[in-house]
Image (cartoon, rainbow, N blue to C red; front, side, top):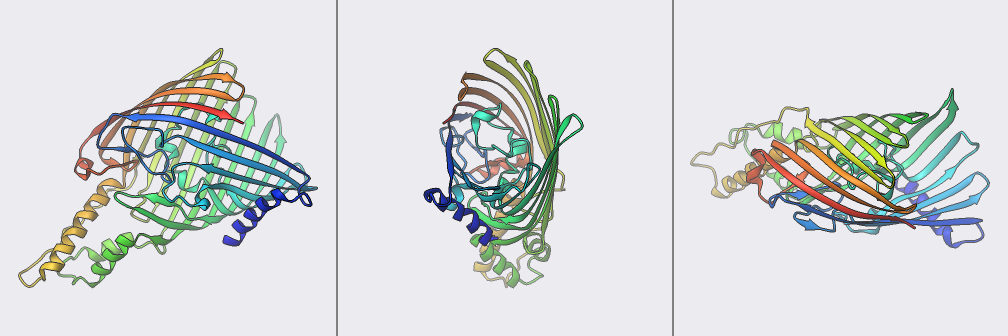
Length: 417
């Protein structure tokens, strides 16, 4: 798959070659977003690929993107897009959102190779173009868990056509992605390989419905701290920690898989907007608990201002596992006992933090200044259940077993250029 991504990146090189490119269109977009969360113990995570911040910050939502579209030859074109934001891993590869070559033999079919968008939800074509969607920040309960697969390196095939009085689109993709995420205390990465994505949408008048499915296999865990703990656990006698076999199996990444299914519906008229999506995530690798999530948003348009209210929720569908702590006797070396106690405490913190159980009520407004600029204001009130902090980061793990709430205020200026 790296060669396919390289093929997409090679298309970017053609931007400078007049021999191959008969026409190049450049465009861009940007968001200056300020957020304030009133919970001093929690850091807001708007995207699992980005760093998290508490209090007042411009880093959660601010971003700038640039895109170039090339007409290479008859039926061939290429697209490259970079988006600069506060990623966990700040390498240029992490900022490349799209880099693909596309072949369109006719108006109905297209084939892309390189880094392409995943098409898993309603905002798939423009997840970082703040101007293009209603909210200051899309519902976190639904969109944050999908962020690790916003794009992937591989190929996809698309078919679209008018059917009856509506427009039908189908897409099939295959590839892999290697996100770098923020954990409880440290970053960790992994690879989703053999990634298969299916999506089908149908638009009729003001209505759009979209069905999606994805599945992949986990591999290549990049978390050095856990690797050291895993080695100690493997060498620990069974009579000291009987639960070690089950713990090692749950955290072992090889052979574990993930699947995701979603349904999205939208309605847009001159005066009213309605958006709703629901998703079911199933994972058998412990750090990614299975969950059900969704939201519903209603908007009312009055001249240049669109007012909206939204309700979103996520709830883990797995039983939160518990494990007995290690048992020591007088013959246990003190160094081993101290290390196993530390592992046990870390394991408890991880188990308390990986599940997401929360509900958010949002209200806001979008003011259209011009055909390429708008301002958005949004207030979120979030209720978090005990051991349901999976969408937040914290440096105070003691709060993970309590119920809490957070108010988040967002103000953003969005522009196309």
